[in-house]
Length: 134
Image 1: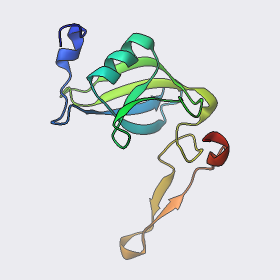
Image 2: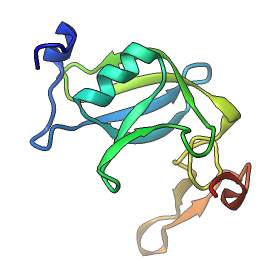
Image 3: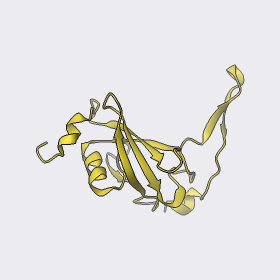
């Protein structure tokens, strides 16, 4: 694409034109969520400083916080050594990144061993999702 920024040529998108994007809290390092980006969402994120992803379920750009108000302000963008994963260091407005009302989508931890192991919810809901999404 001719009006793309030159740096985007270093990014390795998969066969569907997507790249995984990890959102990390810029202050405390907590991994908050993983989403997908395409060329357009990555370029818009870099240009605006606001996280924009590609929603595979809706097949459209997803500007984080467009419904919830929980915008991610991007402090830094990083590309991994293979060029096929993006890391966004963000400030999460409202402290909630997950649609479940939690700070992080990674709120379950595997506990126990073997067949006795199970996923345990270890992080609290900060706000009822019914109050976030209308």
